[in-house]
Length: 240
Image (tube, rainbow, N blue to C red):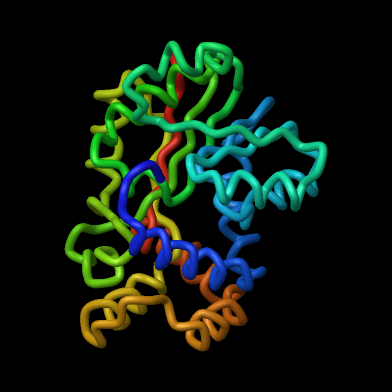
C-alpha cells in the first residue's frame, strides 16, 4: 500500500492484526490462490505475513515485500534468513529503481493491495515488468462498488472491483487474463451489514472469530455458487 495517511495506516494495521488470528480463513485464501502461483514468487504487500507464512511453510521460493518500513522490519524479524524487499508499485522511476528485480519472478501475487493505489493500471503494469515472459500476476481485491462503505473509507480503499473491471485493468496493463472469479460469498452480507447498516469503521474481532470457526461451511457455499459471487474477486493474468 503506497498511498494513504497515518489514519489509514493505523486502521489497516489493526485490520491485519485481526486477520492474523483467523487461521482457517487465511488458509482458505491461501489454498485458493496457491494453484496459480508457480516457481519463484514475489508477494507484493506482505504486511505482517498473514499469507506469507503458508508459502514459506510449504518451502516455496518466496520473496516478501512491502512499501512500509515497519512491515519490512517485522517480516525480517519474523523470518530471519528470508529475503524481504521494499517495493513501491507506483514509484515514478520504477524501472530504474527496481531494475534488478525486473523479469526475475515466475509469479507476482498480491492480496488486498491494488485497491489502495490510485493508479491501479500503472501498478499492474509494474507487476508485469517484474515477471518473466509466460509468468503470472495473481491479484485479489475487494468486490462490488455498491459494497463500498465506511470500512472501505477507513481502510483507504480507492475502489472495489468486479470480474469485468479487474479484467479490464489487467488488459490495459498488458496482461492476458486466464481466469477471474469471486471468493468468499457469505462475507458479502457481513461486510454490507457491518460497514453500511451498522456504520462500523473497524472489523469487529468477535464476529471475525466466529466467521473463522465456520469457514468449512463457507467453503461449501462458495462451491455451491461456483465462485460467481463473493466479497473478493481474484484475477490471474499471464505475461505475454
